[in-house]
Amino acid sequence: MGFFKDRFDQSNNTSSKLCRDLATKIKRAIQNHNKRPSGGMLVWVRTLARLREEKTEDTLVRVIDWYSKHIGEEFVPRALSPRVFYDRFDSLHKAMLTSDDPSELILPENLKLAHNLDRDYVFPIEVRSALPLLVQRSRDNWIAFLKELDEFKCDSERDSRFITNVFFAHAPYFIHRWFGMIAVKYGSMEHFTGPVMSLAFRANSKLFKDSFWRDWSMAWSGSPWTFDNLLDRFLLQENISHGNPPAEPR
Image (cartoon, rainbow, N blue to C red; front, side, top):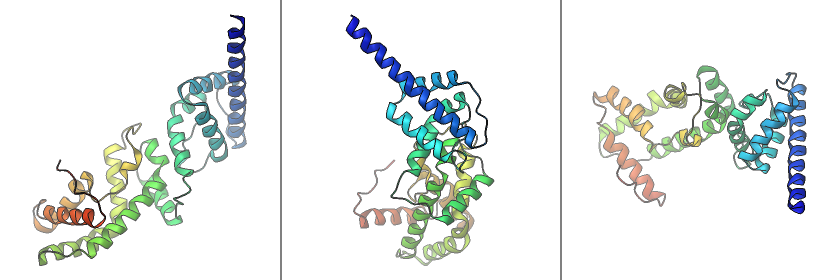
């Protein structure tokens, strides 16, 4: 029994030292940012010990290392007390993963647009922390959609004129309006619990068809469903041309 007790005590001591070290690090980072941290050392240690039990030790260390370097930056969730840090840990983790993705450097124009959207709309914290990447993915997808739509062979002159209207009447402002719709749907939520990247614009999304394509159709033809077949044919062709199987009916 003594052997196992000694090993247990040693493990507890190691865990306590890690949490004390991490608490010291995060408190120092908050102070260096000219913000006085609320909560004493013991509260921070207990909070981090709880997170260590609920998450992995590696995740806890990486998030605190990242937050200590990026505290106060735009789109980094604000967490200056143990309770808020605990509540926003998952949001901090997602923000870290987004910023650590080396394959997708956020372009300055997308960062500027994300800043403007954050000024104009209210988003759940999970969406706000991922906003630069969401904007970049949405703009890339929208530009690709317009390029392919421009090359699409229409069955009728009416379809062709409707596509021209999409380009001239809606394309310049679409991304701002897309995120305005996201704010309308989810802005009143304290947290967004789904996969955040699913909010990036996709031409085959239900939100695009119901809230944009059909609105444009209504304004152009007097019926929201006039150009449903046009969009369906376009998406089917794009699936085939990119080697994807046609979507299952829903």
